[in-house]
Amino acid sequence: MPQTLPEWNTTAFYPSLDSAEFNTAFQKLLTDLTALEALFAEHKIAHLETAPNGADSAQPLEAVLIAWNALADQVRLIQGYLTCFTSTDSRNDLAQAKASELQLFYVRQSKLYTRFTAWVGCLNLDGTLQFSSTARDYSFALEKMQFAAQHQMSPLEEDLKSSLAPSSSSAWGKLHGNIVSRLEVMVQNERLPMSAVRAAARHADAGKRQAAYAAELEAWQTVEVPLAAALNSIKGEVGVVNQRRGFPDALAPSLHGANIDRQTLSAMHQACTESFVDFRRYLKAKAKLLGKSSLPWWDMLAPVGQAGQSWEWEAGSEFIAQQFGAYSPKLEAYARRCLTQNWIDAAPRVGKRDGAFCMGVRGDESRILMNFEPSLDSLSTLAHEMGHGYHNLCLKDRTALQRQTPMTLAETASIFCETIVSNAALKEATPLEKLYILDTELQGQTQVVVDIHSRFLFETRVFKAREARELSVAEFKTLMLEAQSETYGDGLDPSTYHPYMWAVKGHYYSAGLSFYNYPYTFGLLFGLGLYAQYLENPEIFKTKYDTLLSSTGLADAATLASGFGIDIRTPDFWRSSLDQIRVRINEFCDLVG
Image (cartoon, rainbow, N blue to C red; front, side, top):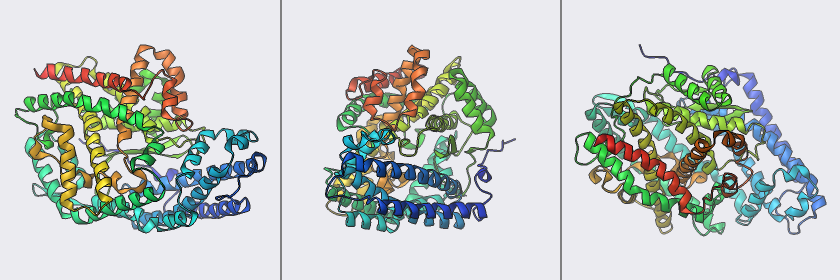
């Protein structure tokens, strides 16, 4: 009998979307925002022609920091609560309406943050910090704001950009989300949501995998025009704004937000590019295992070997908790808390968004969304998202501004937890079980190292081409196929490459998420590097690891990595992490023979 999959318990926050409690909290959020605007006016928080001395700026800075963090905690909870509805049921009109109202809040908040950034950029920061121990706790965030202030447009231009966001950049992202979440596809006489169609890539029946892939491409073709218009618009807007702000290219603000430099990214990409030949060996071995001369796209995620067990929800989640316990009681206790307090929404259904995520909502609480199926891959996803939640747990004593973790470091705990589960599954596995486990692990790593690099190449070229004009649907498809050719190469059958991957990935459609994907590669390889250090000396590692997770918003990635003796600005560290994946590839190829 199929097990009942958990869904979120939203009443832990408010009785309902239309309850007096939620409406009161929502109204308080708006009232406190108005109070923050008044505080900004009182202390003249905006661009200044003359920098105040340190003593005069210390008190206003403290007042703004305290008020900002308090407001951010409120909106974190309300945004999380609304996301519990909008991400699981795109047809919930009340949730969508409230989310739209919240967008207007974000416009006002964004304008204040722009003013705050401009004001901080005018300060003699060293002098100000001498007079405020509170402000010194935010030195890294304030230094980042000073850098950002150098790349601001005029106050009027920044104000106009924020005012237009709901009907421009945010609107294009919302359009993509609504189209994809409501897209239903006919597969072998069955109407399915797109999330279920893409999930069929893991089906045991080769005919169903191929049929689902063909139907998926046909479905993307029916919405390619509006999605191309959305992509053109969002990339065009981001390009113009970046140019006005004085950035040399679209990548520059992403690097600043990721807390890394070009040298680091170049070192990582060099090591990744060198590794593609190894990933192609894995893909060719998988083709051989499936009895094919070349691996088609729809077989990349095909199951091979034997699972050894069904990995149903109850057994699988218990396995995760036990393996987390082998690392530390604290990690196991967190996992069991997620499982027993309905912090996870795992059931696929129409209107629910595809993929998985973890969001912090209040204090040390998080909520996890995924679309579970009884497979080790889904189990790995659950462990991954629980890792994000554990990271949030370690950040619980940090304020909102101190929790601002870049994507590069946000993947640290998730990859670490995923690796714990994968390695545990490999122990004492039979050859067929080992084949299944290695393939499941390598599937994910291929996506993160190879596919994500193809997305990076694609987005880089789209931004460059978009400087001159809008791109056609055919051009988007060509750029995507070229990027896949450079990364997957002959590891896959070129005639089966995915020309609509630009339509699949929602990250392309957000102004704030340009070049969103490469941090996942950073996170995977950084996490593997840390796991290797854990194996070398577990007890010493544990004394530093939670401190690292609690500090991911307090320093740049190179500084935090140096605490573990890691130099991320040279290819050697990244190669050492990829060497661990090569070992797995070799094991897989040896089993295939």
